[in-house]
Length: 386
Image 1 (cartoon, rainbow, N blue to C red):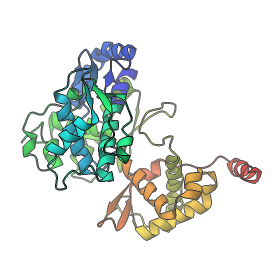
Image 2 (cartoon, rainbow, N blue to C red; image 1 turned 45 degrees about the vertical axis):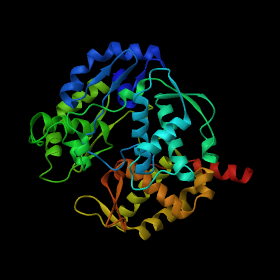
Image 3 (tube, rainbow, N blue to C red; image 1 turned 90 degrees about the vertical axis):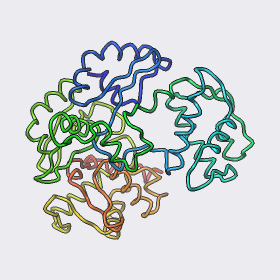
Image 4 (tube, helix red, strand yellow; image 1 turned 30 degrees about the vertical axis):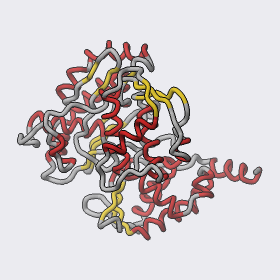
């Protein structure tokens, strides 16, 4: 069901941006509304301006968040920008200096906002660009990049009115929350979360939203549900999303047909995605050679030094097919960090023991890549020609 897939892929469907898609999705909602409500516990917000599926994760994971943001200050700036936009009507204009003054007056972090600092100016530019990408604001005149060079730069924006739909409604006062776990428990309160509808909706959310749901052992209530209800889950995913569902001893995941061009899936279109496919192949080779020790839970523990040794071997053997950035420009350390970051996002590895060791996770064995048979010859011919 393409329309449900569109809702899952996008933060929202903006009527001003694509009126035809807006009405197409709106008309299709009755056909999958019960699936969203019963199996995922999701609501669809529909109003004259936007359609939004409130996608709440079943479990908070490290890769979640706004990819462009690098620190807490940028998230705080976004929250304050949303406060600022609350008082702005649709198509109401404002200038950059109004935003920076409002942020400076309302920010209560450990570090005071100082617009003479380049990193603070850079952070607010990131936030404004994120808001513009989601169409919460529209740039009317000027370029915010100039603010990175001079605090005197002025830019004219207008509010689209969408910002008031960005944050979902909460049933309790979130100012009293002290941990992300409070957000996870917000809907269910003191109820038993390992039984009934709570477990069902959490499991479906994890399956839909996460690259993989790992089996954590005999006491894992979520994986127990997956094993017992596998048939029903398979039917739902095939009927409503045309997705395959693979269940293994150590993990369960959605598998999408390679012809489907979905966002944020693995493998993807980025160069680092191809490199990770080759790295996964190298890991499997080492496993077959028994040079890597596999734990009882099908994981592998490596020191960072050992990990970088494998990355070095990877580069020596396969770099001829990489982009110039990774083949020539990136250092071995930078390449290793990119691989770690990308694999972490897809739950293929995680850092352990205060980031001194790396745990390779079972999903690595599910996704591997090799060059075509004649690729080496073609690559060498191009290199000689250049």
